[in-house]
Amino acid sequence: MDAVVLDGSGMKRTLGRMAHEILESNQGADNLVVVGILRRGYPVAQRLAFMMTQIEGSPVLCGKLDVTHFRDDRADEGEDRSEIPFRVNDKSVILVDEVVFTGRTVRAAMESLLKFGRPSRIQLAVLIDRGHRELPIQPDFVGKTVETAFGDHIVVTMPEDDTEESVTLVHAQDREAART
Image (cartoon, rainbow, N blue to C red; front, side, top):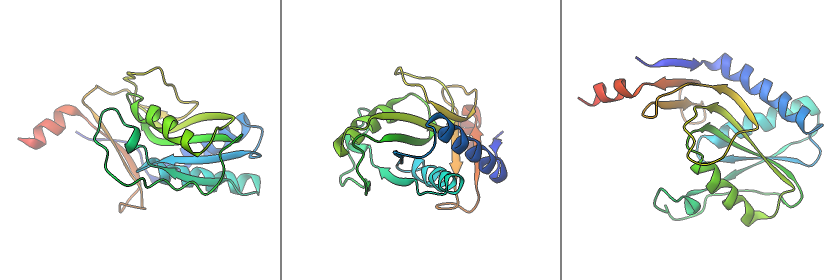
């Protein structure tokens, strides 16, 4: 049976806490930019940047990063859809994804980000950390840690693409049962 990990209000509270933690860790928003990994990391990044802008009273810039060209486990899907309309050189970049799992997406994202310049620092913020790393990558800011089996799936829905906002854990055995 699917388990709701965060509902809409839980996501809002979690992202608000993360925004405060990021600002505290970076002594404010000076020299700070946010970059979301396409596809679901970008809406999370937009929300974090918006919340930090509200807290600090000064704009926190946000961009989106397409990592498909740098993946080692998936085929290249063609055109680069990255949009980073600011310089990352000497900036503290908050790299955002909705879920961290094996670490492969984050590795590809760091490589992709470097084509836009050389940040002074890259920190990783994720809404959900579900474990099972294959690479030595750990997030700096975590919304929620969820214990999962390797075959489980975390589904993050956001109003940008979906009708409601939630994080749901779909157990592997439930996915298998639905297929039969």
